[in-house]
Image (cartoon, rainbow over all chains, first blue to last red):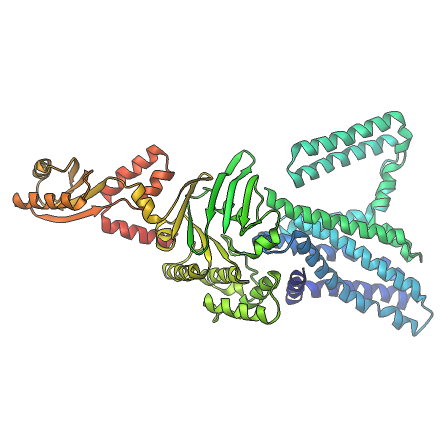
Length: 287
Length: 342
């Protein structure tokens, strides 16, 4: 794992990736600080982070698109399979390297509140609380990016899907207001989700029966629950969309609450996507 | 050293490897021979842990590659068909990474890197970027990577594909050298290569092992009828007359070409082919006809390979075309050019 970590870090800092990522992040947060802290003279640094979180839509996919897709394309994944290291170690090594690349600009950012506090009253606890949350939010998005990169050998495609997924997640709360809140609408949407999940299972395991089985069971459960008590689904879809939004959770921290459930939510998202990435790599061995 | 038991791999309905069983002992060069798509790469990928098997076991020195992957993989160095190189690194950086991943560190890592660089003769290029290296050098870097950690077994998948003749000879010499200290398994679809380097040959076709023996034994085992081909300037009917007069000639064919020379092929099942050639020589001499050329064609690996792998009708077709239209010398040229292209 250490070998992978070291190797990945070397490759990020030998190429432009790490620098472009850092520059973008610092630029956005810099603009945010200019607007909020300097021009508008607001003493809350957390608003800056809330404003800059949209930068993840672009920079996370750029950072993560090549992480596994490139190995596949260059056929270097064969080397990783034949080396005496497990797939979990490969994914963890790569993920930790990405976190280091992400952490370096964030360290620079964490000096800002200290600088601002020299010239006024800055509530440092909320500032640093939201910087920690900002880090975990980014880490969760990076885990998502790693998974997307493991699905394809085309870097461009990985970046495209990544941008679409993160953008959707960013706007899912605003979109939630426009989707149907009726129970019928929710049932239909959940049925579509079940079908999509079936497709994903089929793609990952190449096991048709398992995919059909899972989809069928979910659809059956849906119909039965809808038949017994349709009111359960009332307003469910908007609620789910809000719950799934990684960015919405971050707003809680911005409002000054260090929400441990939020942190655990992000950590479970990270574990979930890293687990899926390991499975996606393992899958290559089985077909 | 390596035992493969009832190995089977299916891709959907397609059986890439079909109930393969064999054992490989320490300290020889083994050749995997088979036409394209015979299952050579699949078998090697399974043996190195890059691919799972549908059924069966692979044991490296007692360690199952599926159950104890780390121990088993430490005993193997693998060079896949396309060398797995990171293009924007130098060979030294690349080897450093692979060595570390194989669990080497500190002074030992440094020594091993220096050793494999010398062994594969890449010291002049080891600071250039890999993307700037020629195919031959990339192949060498790939082999160097496989040698790190001094594994007992080195598995090379088509190590000479795409190289020029000089590079091929160099790589072959390197493989022979490695064969003295390691067990080497290489795959190829080029017969002359396997014949030149390997102590033992495994021929596989459609995922099945169809022969496993020393090259000499394979030849003995499947000796085709000996053939003598002759060229003379006499008329065709005279040649026929003379040949039918020779006692131990059981079967022959003649034809004359535009240049005015008559060529013939004599087939026989006599024990000693030199008895036949002596009789042919005296028969022609007695009739005062000049034998311009006489050559003996024994069964070679090519025939064995064709016989074993091709379908019957295809084999017959090729056997009928080859000996008559291609002179022995030209045949050698053909082999050379095959090597060059391959």
